Length: 215
Image (cartoon, rainbow, N blue to C red; front, side):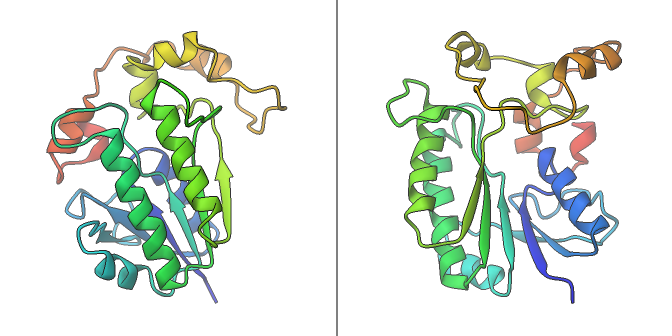
């Protein structure tokens, strides 16, 4: 029997690829999202359910029966209406709801070199979440990618504040690479398209019904 997997942001960038791999493996997949009305790239194979951060009991109920929760939820910068502190608060609510719902395991997407002492909120916030997840009692796996890249990626096309993280040497590790695709090789193969089309994260956040790839 297929196990239920819930992916946050499955209609977005990295979440879409996680959901696609799970579907290919024959799993039952749900999307936990702030944009339940957004165009569904899976032709109805992945049902969208709202985050319901303001209603933790409803969020927990929507997670009941879930085997694995893949958490990609985060923000890239502070802006009126969303912030790193909001993302931390909401993620903690998500972990608590997962525990209440009896979720078997949480796969959490973090960042290289998280530290609560970091002056960069991206890295300090991720460190707080790792600490909370480790102490939650949930079974978990924490992934610490340096750069997740692809054709829909906003970071590679519109790199902004991440320059500071790069200059601070926070986006590398001494461990062997876990992936097989080198960023340098991918950039060479896609050099004709990189930076040609501007993708606005704000536009994607404000338009919750349009196709993610077209915004």
